[in-house]
Image 1 (cartoon, one colour):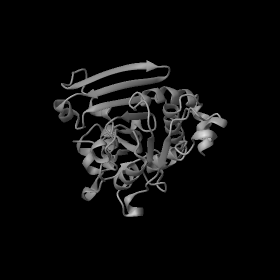
Image 2: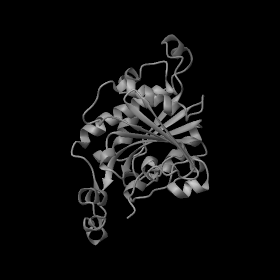
Image 3: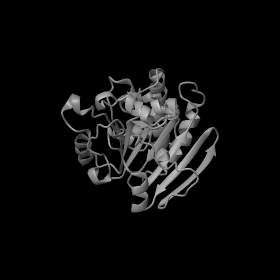
Image 4: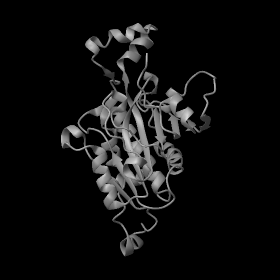
Length: 289
């Protein structure tokens, strides 16, 4: 049985056996375990079912239980995100998802706490002590069902105007294991295919589509119901029994409101920390709000 997952670390888990075309290393930074997976060639792409590039996974304490030192966690993740960004130039931050559907609201809510700075320049920036801010623009395109326009089409239009050096795309992800919900962050330099984790594939946001490097950033908030059934029973056939008439179902934790609230804050502070390392990411979240 093939289970959906947006997480490269889950796709790369094959016991202790090395996967050709894949480099993987892990390290512990305080209470965060960081795993960097690099897909180097076509063989690696086929093995993991993902485009070649770098995928960074941060494993944290469950956000529903732990909100200690969120700023410190954001600075660690911000360093990882900054390593994938160009050193200078405008960065466009895009929050994908549906604000009205809690498990899908990570993108819009996170983007709303990222400080837009592209308009802060010149004498005003100098006189207010904000002359070290990196220019950033923030855009929330909504979803196709609300606008009738693909998110990638709108973001491409904004890119044509803003001409960013890079785009950061935030989106809720799907995991294969319930243990990863609300306690995992993935950062990658291959962009994002909206809705792919829940079988609702939309046009991808990547370098080929937008013409600039695209960084994907997300937290898993849902898991395929078939995975839950198999984990509980240990039987693969149990997964098919929870999808009557072929209807797919996704499962989300009952504390999803709290997870989204804290995950959105963490993601926003991570981006603020990456873009504006000279300033407190927590204070920038307050300023953006």
